[in-house]
Image (cartoon, rainbow, N blue to C red; front, side, top):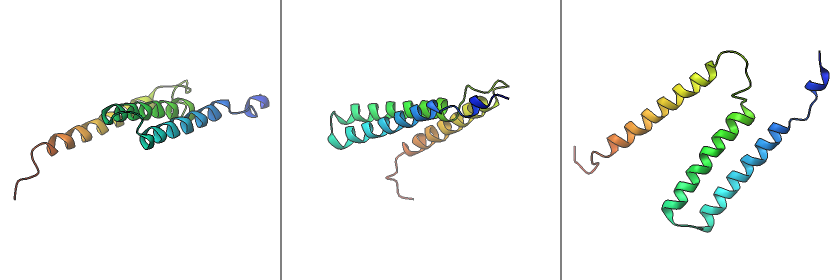
Length: 102
């Protein structure tokens, strides 16, 4: 049993934490300071959100570290499919005009 491996400093966690804080604070600053137009600001904020998801998955949740079957990757993909379906369906339903009297 290798006890040094168990006591190693968690550099991946520290790196993930610093990246998460940096992405969050950068997005917050950009929104509060109005550094660009509305459409560009939304696009950059969504990009930072996607990067934040990747940081969480790879540095905290260790999505690529398991040697066995990729059940957790399949479950994640299914969850993303469900999320996309619900969001797309909700947007589609909301486009039918909410100004009608029922």
